[in-house]
Image 1 (tube, rainbow, N blue to C red):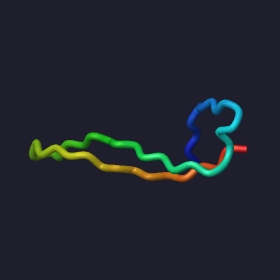
Image 2 (image 1 turned 180 degrees about the vertical axis):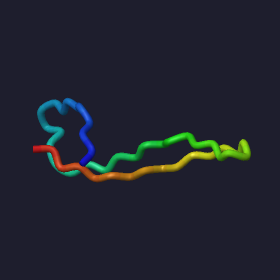
Image 3 (image 1 turned 90 degrees about the vertical axis):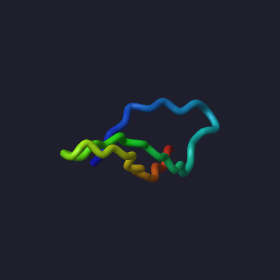
Length: 43
């Protein structure tokens, strides 16, 4: 389970899609970005 402390103001309830960009680097020094998507339903 992923827990993110977020506050939503009135009218922002419902489904949301988030994208988190995670910088990564390999043992050979190559770098890149991994994009992680997740859905949330705020009530």
